[in-house]
Image 1 (cartoon, rainbow, N blue to C red):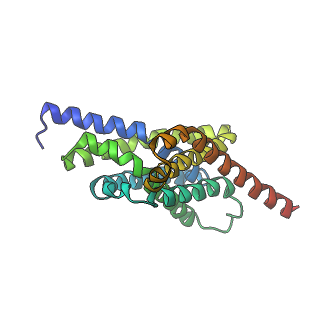
Image 2 (cartoon, rainbow, N blue to C red):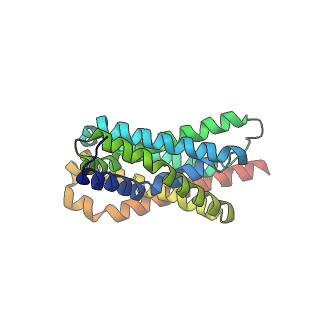
Length: 227
């Protein structure tokens, strides 16, 4: 394929923007794969990143127009809350009887669901850069895979040394969920753009607090029942 200079610049822009927007994806991949056996972690991260990129392509090509549908962001935010809580509360408890292949499938499925939700916002920026060049879009996103895997690998090492970062990662997802739900077209239409903009930070903080609070209560209950 013969890219012009402008196309090469556009390709680099797609790669760069996807790296910037994939920080949350790397967090999810690292959180979901941290409970896998050592030999399967890299497989899980590569598959997770591959699923993330594939979904990003699908959303960018076909689903971007759905972003203006009422309730879509509200539903996505609620789903993201659920994923965030599960990533903290399902920290390998009771997994001894589960086959390694099932753990791998579960990890990749978690990444797929989370990325499908988080991609709703990311696709607009990527589509704006790629414009009408589907080839540029696909190639740029594919090239981004090893960079996302590298980010997830680094985060996973940090999670092993500092387990408290697992909670921080879950809080980040809650933060994103709060912002997503507040920016739903239905909410914007009811409250108005100025009010929504003014309450973005409080909504993000509340979203993170909800995830941390629910996860803490669940783990505390489980600990009490186990005694």
